[in-house]
Length: 453
Image (cartoon, rainbow, N blue to C red; front, side, top):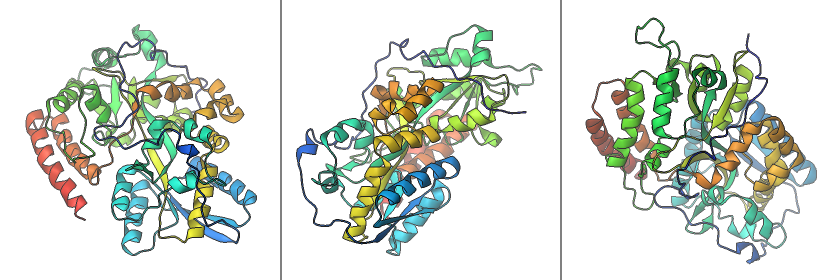
């Protein structure tokens, strides 16, 4: 019988590593960040919400995530009688993105949408997205100076193109190393902080009792879509997935090869595997069939609910290599400029409410996501969560080492091509050199096709 874990211990490895982080910038080709003192550039918008208006918000939240969104939205409408916000669930992320593309081509975009920045780039290139900078600087409904300082630069800059703010951060999370506390204690080993320590720990914690080459307990489990989030290993090896400014792919490089060799060494040794039929990497960890897994902090509610009795799971920063870069990901909220002026004003006021300290703290408390404001750590609701679940502090502690991925149009298509080649490497069907050469060629073709779509 499964039940919620009784406790989660705070990871202590952050201070132990001597590796140097690379700051909170993205990969190659960083976006411009909000200008210093931008909050003092006060403007005045002509449109105010003085009559009833309705806006639509397309999203992919479900379960507790959607319930938290609905509560915040109801609170907003209670305080803003002229604005009606229709939350419209579009299914999974892929469903949402497919419907957004179809709606763009039929000129029927919603007012607001939840979207990853690597998807949003296309809409910006087509001139379909509203610049939120004037709204942020509006003297009546805009941000104060404290607001600009409160949102981490890493999250802010993920919504900036050419100095213009096209999106605001909403649901963010971090890639972390979850681990079975009891297994580590029994093995007498510390939580790894380097690649070498990680590989050694995975080997020691793997259990193959009958020696058939199919371990009952794997040292580590990775997500099936490993290529999509492979950026931290490439950055830790001194490389990157691609260049945001030039659209160059860096798949067939010494740095990418070094990262893939590390990951593949554990796959070939049968001390690590992909999630496979378990679908999510945290499932075998929860069941005691893995000692470690790499997954998002957003998986924490599912881990808490689904972990077998007697198993305690904690989390730590990803072990580092040449650098200690940590990947943060998640969607932003954008406003399409196909809406009326009053709808766009109402959308801004809703987004400002959705992401203020009180509401980002509430959303993070109810879900596995990270607050998008530093001040949320002192909000009574989220502070109580931190006291009960100190594991959630990890994402704040790692932010100085954090980055978010590049936002190239077609970048996800290129990474999918890399993923196909990595599957062949991990299954032993193809050499790393040949796989990366083909990934480079196929990825370039996929990216060009997406840009020309």
